[in-house]
Length: 333
Length: 100
Length: 173
Image (cartoon, rainbow over all chains, first blue to last red; front, side):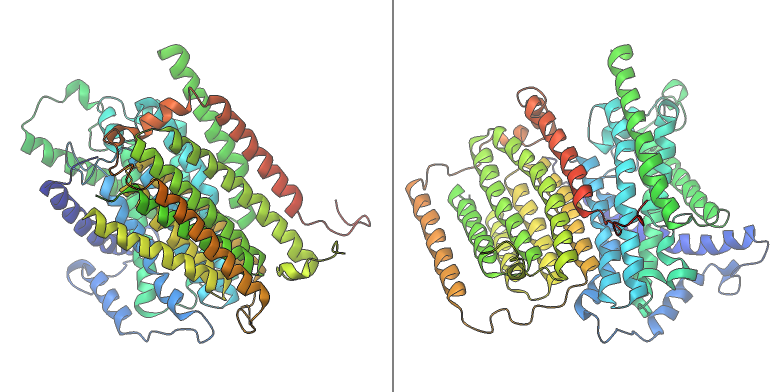
């Protein structure tokens, strides 16, 4: 078992702090990028260049009335918004932000990531059920079905990375990519992972949960005030988390491209700073990708989402896994 | 340290809860969940023996039992759906067409 | 420390188990069972079976229970009105059977008490993925393949049973 040391706590604390803040930054970035794409100004009144907008948003949410449906289940209605936030926060524990900069190194951390991700489904399902509203229920069921469906290609894509490394530790996977990122070794897996991650975090083009035309607000139709704020926070935290996971699994984690070939030996402090900044820049890029896609691509229909998941991505990811396994077994060994 | 007896006793209590649940409940879904609870109790026994003996075999058995539980859940829920479609209820006392 | 965690988890497990059996609302029952599964996973961690703890959450809490919730919400069941409203012979006999079973098991445990006081030191390595994989893909390979076939059969069977058939007179395609 991995020892819990003081540095684990420090890394965990800093990472959680950064994650919570990055969700706020993501909200701001979403608005500004959306404005940029649609050729308008975006929020620019609160603070310099609108930078205090997230704080204003939170204040507004806190001051709203907290409505609970009378016929719904009040306890579950109150608990449901916390679940996605908690699962998002739990994910940070195993992600390496630099060489040796991780909170824990448990020996099946990839499985831990998948297990925690699979618990996130409860948030949307229960929110939909506890509201006692047909829009919420349909939205919740859709979200749950979608998340379950896309967990399989996601898992297979991760598995196709794991067989390269031969270890289920995320730290080992990150360290393996020092020279070659998995994006270059396993491009199909990377693409599948990105698509599945979009679907997992319920973002456009897969944001059927909140398809306004059909379902009003999806599972959070009956949510207001800070309970809605929790869902909002959770959505952006999942954007950040999924960006981190894409970076970690396929885009070299904290390594510069082909760093093994040209990067000289650095002192631990310089290396640490470099690692963390590289990781942050990559994560930022994928957050931008999430926002970019949202304001560019229209939403799928529900049957199209299911078809894409089950009859395109899943067979493709299994085939990709088998081919990679065969290549590794017969040619490399 | 905790001796193995405590784990086994916990498993026994869980098993009994599941058993009594199967006997007293009429909702087919809850009965099914009680069966899952009993399976879990048995898994707990297997794992506690496995780790007090330091032998992997018990864990392998649990792995298979998890797979069987998954298969069982899928089939069982499909059957419950079929029952509901015929009876508009999942009350097992109403599933009595073949009773003499 | 371990003892306190064990007591906490054991109370949580038993409490959620009872909650599941005694709750009239099916969704609440299912959620109690989820809590039960997660606390059992915690007990697996105490037993140093890390891989199975994760698998327990991934398979039971993450997949099987979601399926249960799904079906419950799909059927949209009402609460059971009379869980214990009238005293029936059935309840009493079930209760006595439960007591008898529990005391039998506990009595048989009495005979083997104090034989295994401590978690084996080999568990440091035996609970990991590597150790399990080594045994699973060598000694138990055949059983593993059979499990794969079983799961496939289960999926196909479930589809066959649950598939909604439209009326027989030509309307179905």
